[in-house]
Amino acid sequence: MSYFTGLPRELFTFFDDLRRDNTKEFWAANTHVWREAVEAPMRALLTELEDELPPLRLFRPNRDLRYTRDKSPYKLFTGATSDATPIGGSGYHLHVDADGLTIACGAMLFSSAEQQRFRTSIAEDVTGGQFQDVVSALTTASLPVTPGLRPPLKRVPTPHTGDHPRAEFLRWKGAAMATEFEMAPWMHTTDAANRIRQVWRTARPLMDWLAIHVVTDDAPRP
Picture 1 (tube, rainbow, N blue to C red):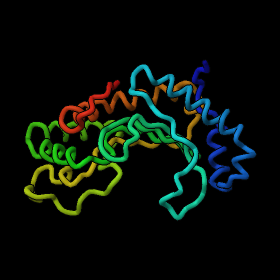
Picture 2: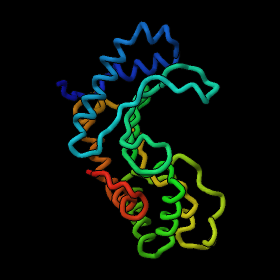
Picture 3: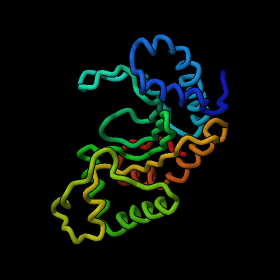
Picture 4: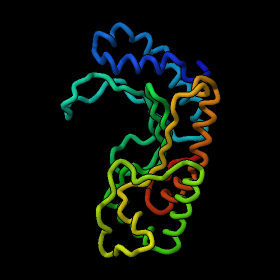
């Protein structure tokens, strides 16, 4: 069993090199770098975090080329998620590339049923006010809550009106916290796991609100 000692500098330089030469030839010559400097420390990190989180799945390095014009074969990042479904549910997400680290959690894109529950909860004074308080608290903590993967609707959906006190949230198609960190020395140490864990702990009120009012899957949370 390998223990997490940090995200090595070679991880970041590997992706910097890969974005300049995203070819099968480069990958074949540097597969050992990916295994030793990317896959191994990432798996050690996920093991470090697993006592507090739902299982996190490491992304595969190969890109899905079926539905894109960009045929570059490899992802320019590594990462993990506890929720692999593209629509519905909520989860924890981690993204690491040549420039730094992104930590996120929440509902990236509501299902139709979740969208309706979200709007109903936002429209109600008590539950909507609770969500607004969560967003305000996380914003103060420099952990902004966003509409997720899709841009908000241009207009407030019926039967609600544009003068609703939470009209902004009624237009959202998701609700997720995401914060970015530029590459820094702490990422190369064991402190990286502590900082990631602390971000997700701070964002727990968002996950709890979603679990109670929107998402039906009550996965364990930190």
